[in-house]
Image (cartoon, rainbow, N blue to C red; front, top):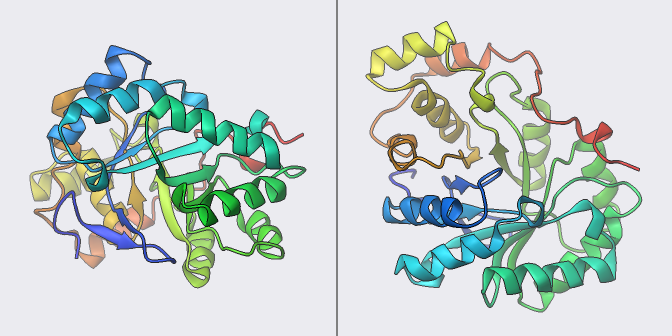
Length: 277
């Protein structure tokens, strides 16, 4: 049951992951990221998503230490960047991330993009980190069906999460169905389509009916579709508002109307054309 910010989904190997969290992409290292993460944790968030390439792991770690919330109550995600992919280099990159975060372990470690020449070796490194207990769960980001099928031919441990660009304009239905069949939890980055849905008439009408904001309706759509979601904000009032989605429910008709907005429109990079040398 998705009752509040602490509600979780059980990943393939039994780890409990919050349905809702804070993303810190493009949040500036230093006071900005410290303040936003602390505001989120104060508001009840328990999941924080960062990455090596975001350049703010140290600030995330500082905020965790200053939050006053026990480490085992939090779910921290970071990701190995493309330049660090490969077996030995991934292990080294993970150690650096762990040091910057100031943590003893990470809850979820992801392969950030499917670099075809490297992601199988990278995945072997993640399997080792998982076997060694340095991460509680491992997964991928931006992997399409063909990438997952290829990885699964050699993986000893299936990815537990696939984090992808996903919003009503890019609903990724086929990928979602594939991941569901494989026991891989889908997670949405850019769930608000980088602001491109904030004047959508369909969502605005639904929001007015529920006395909610457009972002709240979109984020509720995520949850009711079984999608883990991590909206980003640096403003405390927005962080609090984004999470105010556990006291209403979209009808089947409303979900269908939002589903119908899909036009496969990306605002981020396509996985097949992103740094995929």
